[in-house]
Length: 373
Image (cartoon, rainbow, N blue to C red; front, side, top):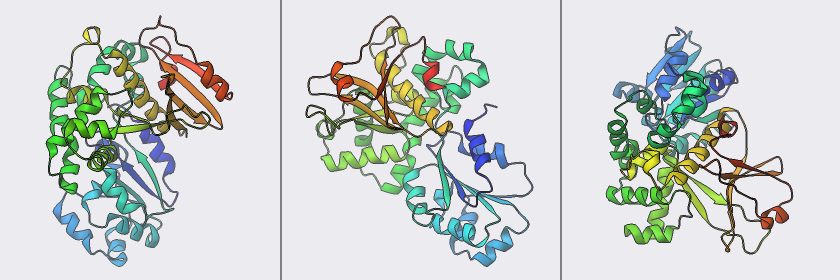
């Protein structure tokens, strides 16, 4: 069993009189994680939101009946909580009226679960995102040397648990995920009328990883208006398939102000969307794969270690650029990513003069572990 960093994070937050909310894409291992933590405990009530009888049980539940159901228990785990109507109010009912009960809830999509929990549970919850497996977690499982050897493979097939645990069948697993399963919540809740358009947007984003993405350009590619394209991108973000990186713009008139890049949380999904599983040695987009891998792994690292940072890229109209920037405690940490360890990279004087409080580092195959673990 591959140990998840989130396991210790959740354990550290138990007993704080707040609900623990675990969100993430489908198949990232939320149910497995919760069963690992709480599945064998006798003091836990386990409720599966996918079960119709559980949905009916909680539909018009009162605090009095909840106390009866949860009597002599220390915890209630609600898996697939987004399936339960007005879930935020139900969770609030427990945290307010039965404070001795620790509430844990998981959901496969933030745009449904989070929208219904944020207001009712203001100040009453810890919220976390469970991403696909990380390089750090796999290094702890396999050993760093072995996982480092697997790096070219991970750049192609990514870190979804079922993919990692299905050697030789990675393509089939990824095809099943990327064909429809990951987007099931979008199709169900948002009544997307043209799912083929959503897939075209994903493909366009996949080909532009590492480059600026324009809603206007995407709308021309897929034949939708800008507003609809923005809505689709937001839904893809809320289901933990892609994430945006905005541009740093503070000092210079020539800095790009509204530019953004869009990355995938998992390289395997990105490659599946464009149906390209060619090995690294035969590809012309290895720089894009490397950049997407590093930034998505960095997001996992930051969360798993409780580090808070603002994230950007930087570019000017003259095409001076920096791949990735983190702002922590008033210091800008600028990074350039190079797959080829022998390729040099230099910080532009424009950036250095405009932002004197900075640290600059080149991340390549010789030192990437210091960036992701």
